[in-house]
Amino acid sequence: MAWRSARNSSLLCMAMLIMSVGCDAGGIAIYWGQNGNEGTLKETCATGNYDFVILAFLATFGNGHQPTINLAGHCDPSTNECTKLSPEIKSCQAKGVKVLLSLGGAAGSYYLASADDARQVATYLWNSFLGGQSSDRPLGKAVLDGIDFDIEGGTNQYWDVLAKYLSGYSKKGKKVYLSAAPQCPFPDAWIGNALKTGVFDYVWVQFYNNPPCQYASGDIANLEDAWKQWTSDIPADKIFLGLPAAPDAAGSGFIPAGDLTSKVLPAIKGSSKYGGVMLWSKYYDDETHYSSSIKTHV
Image: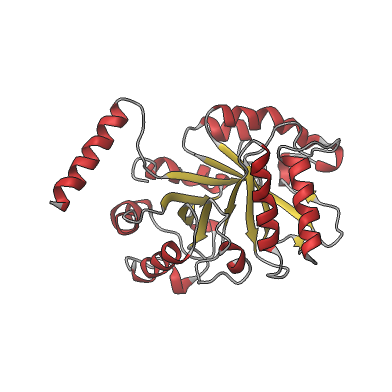
């Protein structure tokens, strides 16, 4: 009976795809911004491979620091050059791609000194990148879809406060999506508490550079155990499998596309919280065409 209902469901899904109305399949999220040789934002969204593009990074903020965006070779924020991205962001959104700004990164200078500091950062993000208004909008007038937390340093304090303040801005009209990129060891050392708030829409867990919970040459047991913990313990709408898009995109954790589609995805797609795959990064995806080779399976 279960087999029959599952089969009927998949047939319905196929019929919906044929009718071009889609069905609840997974999507691909990609990080863009840390390599000037990865193509433009407009070109990235024009591939049709990605449902989310995450701009990396707002690398300096909090504790009285002047917030500074770092998009590597793409543009120079000190001369307002990054405002040229505004029409590209709108081009992505017109294609149905959600564009988020990622806070943090591995090499940033950031931390929140107090709950009030978190409030001030939320206000800055709202006015400078989201639906608010400011004379200084680093990416121009385009209104981003949300904020991503890629916190890998500083302290683990007040990220929950920042997330709640940002979530509160959704009441002002346009939904502010919140995402996060924790490491796969559970709970995440930096934003574990913030993820308990229940205000995050998407959590792309980094199943790389963490051997105890990542895939290893045919063995999916550790990854599957970690996946089950994340999907059962974190109150987010969708959980994504975060992966490097090429072997040299991370120190460890790369999964060959064939292994991903034949072994890993079948083991995790049964979760109602399965959202798809996150890739680091567009530059490496250009090297391997990883997203193209997995897209129909995600």
